[in-house]
Amino acid sequence: MSFDLVLFGGTGDLTWRKLMPALFQAFRHGKLPAQGRILAVARDERSDDDYRRFIHERFEEVESAKRPSDEEFARFAELLHYRRMDLSKPDDYAGLKACIDERGAATVVLFLATSPHLFTQICAQLGRAGLNGPNVRVVLEKPLGHDLQSALEINRTVAASFSERQALRIDHYLGKPSVQNLMALRFGNALFEPLWRRESIANIEITLAESIGVGTRGEFYDRTGAMRDMIQNHALQLLTMIAMEAPASSDADAIRDEKLKVLRSLKPFSEADVARDVVRGQYRAGQVNGKPAPGYLEEVRVPPGSRTETFVALRTEVQNWRWAGVPFYLRTGKRLAMPDAHIVINFRTVPHAIFPGANRANKLVIKLQPEDGLELHLLAAKGSGQHELLSPVSLDLDFDKAFATERVGAYERLLLDAIAGRLNLFVRSDEQEQAWRWVEPVLDHWERDGSGPRPYAAGSWGPPAASALIARDGFAWDEEQ
Ligand code: BG6
Image (cartoon, helix red, strand yellow):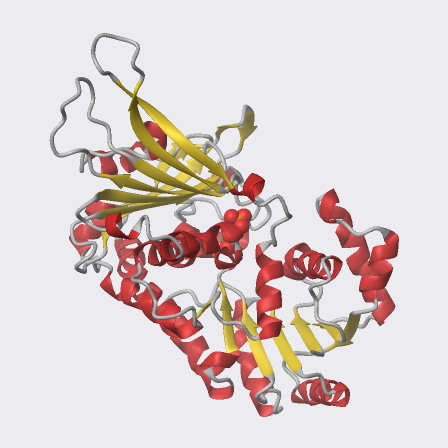
């Protein structure tokens, strides 16, 4: 199947850091459909060869196993083409359309890897130029809006030119093999389903911890903050996969309908809830992995006195029959003790303990990254003393070892799906809008509230208030147990 993949923002960070390495991996693995063209679009004048050289040099910054040899790059580079465009000029879109029509590829994917403030303008122009035929799909990178209002605005403009099935919204977490595995775990195995409910589960914890700071993205990050950057999208998507009912089929809309129901069931935040159930923090200087790390306010291009949060911990509930009363704790932050994304399903303790000693609960830890695996924590009798003393033991499963073949990276998977028109791993507009609707009262409250984020030391697990939030219910974060 021939395709044209047009990368708007063809010289930008996202293109050379993520998209080109992913496309090269797909090419190397022989997964990119034959007869493809990758057409990068940007403002300055360059020839195809200039562009190929530009991308080749950028590959130096890619981890070595994923870097092409000169010979491999020469073959990959045959796919790469460049076109100058001024995104405000209708004539330039007409020129792009002519260039695409001339080739007549079966599928056209328009990937907007530009700053999001250009999305509405580009989509409107694409529609006017007729670059929205049935074989065209448009891919939108996050952040999709800054709040509900701006997300609605983007979705309205996109919908004026493209149908819902033509508009692919990326949440790159959905492309990670470990995240896809959540669906397989729940709906490919009969084992967990009878236990996956309020009667057996005490609470659920979702942690997305990073040890890196904001790096060179200070300006963008300061306008965004952890709530918009990680909770509104990645963390909520994970929550929907853990809490959703079994979809009727693996069809994209069957899955997205169930995810949307979860988002609609999330307990809305009142003013009092935000004050009680949400903790925001901002890192101060500290030590990460034994090395000194600056505070957020000392990072490049972060305005003095900024009150942007780099950490969020919150408690919520999914208000339906399966989950009523089960707390879901979500936590994310930059410059935390270690990079660690995982979900913990904490089961209830036995109703009546007959063994001496602590009555510990079973838990299932779903490790998302850097490791990708499952740990099932059980209790067993060692049989070494007079009394049957219970000792904790765990069953460990490492998916990288279990599946010895190299696993496909998130962007590689999402780009291949976009070309093939598989929509399962893309976010539908109503899911995205509902997620904004849910976080907005928190953002509004923070806007009005003078107290600002709580400080935490780089290299810690966030402000002590995050531990207090979960301790209030008699629980503890995984690393504190
Ligand atoms: C992005 C955020 O969406 O996800 C970044 O904008 C964050 O701030 C990144 O670092 C984390 O993704 P990953 O794949 O490194 O866990």
